[in-house]
Length: 102
Length: 151
Image (cartoon, rainbow over the protein chains, first blue to last red):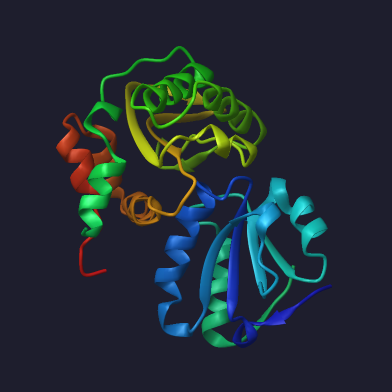
């Protein structure tokens, strides 16, 4: 299982199919929540995920495609773009420096 | 140009339609697409991409709101970045969820990021989410979706 420590996360990518809707909304929230943690939050289409991504958040329906693009990066898959518990756990891991797994 | 002037450009008055009706989800998505086409933001083919996207992964985001938009390949059908806000007072069944407001998106760039960020904050605040679902004037919508300048 791929894991990463929250304190090692410098670039967080939120990915969705087109990179213009849901990922934009979630990235906006995360940018706000992680402003003080030195994390760069970007949104991208799955096909355009930047190589420097330390962790990728995506809808569970897209997780397999994301894995194909970034096989060695921790992927957090979510069902809700607003208020998903997996996102809350990720934010907490970054803020407290605990491990994030898949 | 200030952030808020940019938002006004993204959200044309003609694309804020607050008393819409739709038979079902596809009909609602079509109306959203037609609003974007009517203001010259997208080609008619973009509407088909919006329907395809909705059928593969729902754009429902919670609190009675969906954000229909096209697929990656359909970005070439976008003429300029714009949003449309359509309100369906009677509600539309959206795969078991009830949608009252659609924020439709046509975007090749990142100009709409601040506005969608503000939408996320509205949805996290039950009172502001209720105000959005109840909005009857374009200015109500604009006010709710305009970020505070200092952010």
